[in-house]
Image (cartoon, rainbow, N blue to C red; front, top):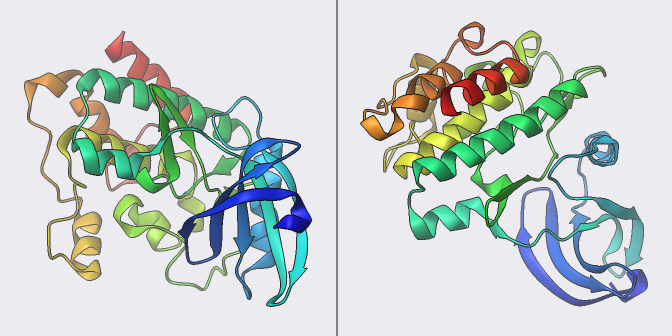
Amino acid sequence: FNKLGLENVVLLKSAGQKDVYRATSSKIGEVVIKIIKPNQNAERIEREIEIIERLKNINTSIIHNHGYIECEKGKFKYIIESFIDGVCLKDYLEQVKTLSYDEVVIFLTQMLEIIEILEENSIVHRDIKPDNIIKNDSTYFLIDFGIARELDKASITPSSNTLGPATVMYAPMEQIENMKDLIDSRVDIYSTCLVAYEMLTGKNPYYEDGDNLPQIMRKIEKGEYKLLDDDTYQNINEFIQTCINRYPTRRPESAQDALEWFEYITN
């Protein structure tokens, strides 16, 4: 890390593809550095960098630098990004359990605006979940574009794969089953509204304690979950139910349509 001019390095998390650290740069200030583990898909990593560098006017991290660094353990790809001050939504939900109707309206408005910008750039994030959202007071940031799809480029995932890149508890069936022709912003709308449901109720709609992966997938495939029945949520109940419909054709056709509908029912 000294070679990169970084000090006060602290490990934030060790994920499947990378180790993520917080550090201080003498030139930039507080940063996040991602060290990519060996034998990862190099093309997917470069796609992630390209996507983040391409996006403008969106609440996400900024890439300051990337390249390769050699150490005793070998040669590693690194990415230095801006540090987003705030709390991971997953950690926040574990503390507070649920958020108010008004807070969830703010969340949905900001996330739909982000998805609309992604849509304009032919990008589908494909991994919207509490782990990948940073909350700073009433502002939400979407991070980790590691499995994002650029619809105007050839897909990296082989079409023959029966399963696509996904976090099953937050992904619709067309994404889980690698149905490429159906992958568009409706995937991100689905995932965002699943997170909103969790923020309102304190639970993922498709998970009960003790459920295994096949049980969860069967529920997702059938669209089986407990509906929001509190009158407090009446304005957004139909919206959330429609957006997490198991059939993509029954969801709003675009992020723009979803945002316009949401603003109409909440303003």
